[in-house]
Image (cartoon, rainbow, N blue to C red; front, side, top):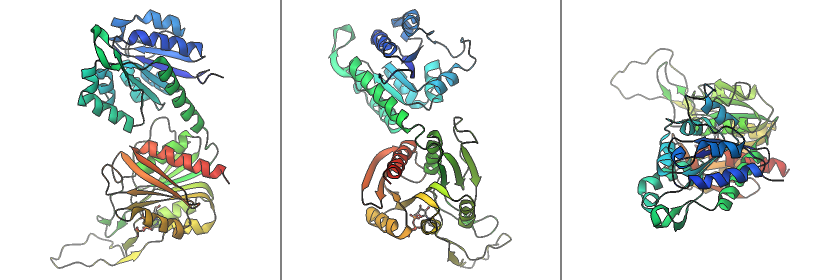
Length: 406
Ligand code: CTP
């Protein structure tokens, strides 16, 4: 069966001469059984009329955020799409997408979607080689967008060089791969009870001060959102409140806010047994032995705060036998893999996800992460620097593979 049969694809066409080639892509997608909604930018319409796309797609080409029957066309299109294919993508369209600009229907749809996005650049060599274009494409790939690199060949105006739209075969093959990858993941955790922890615990010294750490909770939230997208019933026990995407309703992610390690431990214990526990939280190893009930006043003298050890929640879960698949995390700054190996052994986890928090753009508060997943069985998977949502995908793929192998 065709990989496109019955799939809902938004075909974004932007304003370059290669827009005429998008007509062929549209035709071939429709022939392969896809439901294609063409979305044309203003500039695209100067190259190819919308009637051409509407006739081929059998569906009205969409042109505007404001002159549409649907009052929120970008949200409807973004939610319904299983894939967005931007073909051709001009340097302007790539820059706008990288910057998150949504001043037209295509830009807004790209921001509103959770579907995979494939971008096919086409432009003159000078523009393709400009550092701004390279920077913008890097930002997009870091966020998980797939780029079909252009080829060398004849360009508009009789020039020859890099920047010519990739061949339809490679565009369609990449689109099919992106659809297959997202389709395989969807529903792969259906019915599983998943507990995720996120953020750094705060251990009070007095009513206004605490012992804490630099964890932002972003990786834990990304795991919760991705597990929910795969059909899991997720409880997210977090120390920080962050926005959850609209696609994630309260019925798929139950958010429980806690502050201290002790509260996190209780919140988890109350919700066991679980099929999967992902301990992404940075749990403070120590807490002040006694929190002072009123704000401490400065005396000008040195202050000693006695800290006592917190329970090791992950190790307790490892011993409890009430977790199907237990995933621990390790934030390290030196001897990264050796320390992670030791944690894998001592904590009873099935997987340890380790990151070097001193590496650039990795770990605390960044939107990107680079990790290695160590399995108790001995294998290692390295995920190079990627958006935290993509790192979450890789971790959950590994969890699913591990569960399937048992
Ligand atoms: N963890 C936990 N309870 C603690 C400390 C850590 O459950 N009191 C969990 C974290 O959520 C993480 C894993 O254990 O999944 C490893 O955390 P990390 O801080 O890297 O390791 P520690 O065990 O605290 O060891 P160290 O600080 O000595 O590196």
